[in-house]
Image (cartoon, rainbow, N blue to C red):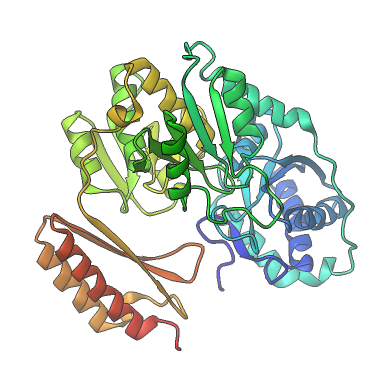
Length: 450
């Protein structure tokens, strides 16, 4: 059976299967039935980002949930992590996020949290998929639900939680922070939180129109933020993605920094204060070897896992770690939340900067990155690489060429029809050459036909 759930829930073009109206309504109904099977009251919290399809998907979910006698409460436009936080705090049986994260506005997605605020298990996903594939006709006659009125006090609860993280810090009046909100879920909440804490805040890309989410802005396009930081002589720039579960940095010099910098800074900060558990940090195969070296020098181990914050969380829970994340900007502070939160991560980094009495470039300057090249290959089908001897042979030859002084990682995207090739080593020219070679071979056997 083809999986509908990827590493970050269900995702596709809005209006197309599996994000068409009948399927969404079946999903809502099936979730209610699953909760009841598990002995849980079917109370479900829903939040969304700013895509124009979000309210429509919310209404379709409402039709399925309420048609099955479940209760659905809307938090309105709110970050992904806020749904996780509020689901736990207000004891909902499940939380649903309507978002496609960093994807263009035409895409959307649905991811589901358990009552603990973590993504549902593979077992639950399979049960919901079975209902979608076998029982879609049962709710085909349901009408689209009515518009759902958000409860603003839920967003206020989340803001208060964030503000409490830095309430005792002494904020210099002249400290200027530019927030790139990606025209997404952080557009109102992030500037409000930083303003209430006393920062001089300059928000940009914070006027969503339903179609401009992630458009030449946010964590995937931080160069615009870098120009703003330099022009305004700001102390720090922070770029969120569409659902605000990740954060990327621009220091006062205009240099773009990533999630590896976050992990190195936070590992040291938390270890110095006795907050770091297990003396280890969890990251993925995409994190730079420079992070591994920097952590080792600080007396902290690095445990790698598969790409995806879901797998980072699983590994953290397995080894008892409370800090983990991805190079892309997802960072999990497990003592606070079981999911990545770009705004919380931002506050943690500002806290570290204020405590050290240094600039952001000095704070994050300890990471010395090895040259790394990442290529994407659009594929027609995600077949096992082992089916193609030439692909396997090329992988083996590249790993031999790197001879322990570099890394090759080849994997499929969990949300898009892409094969991702990452090569890392000591010499940039050699790394680019090897990455190009691997990309050509994958494209030859799996690439989309012209």
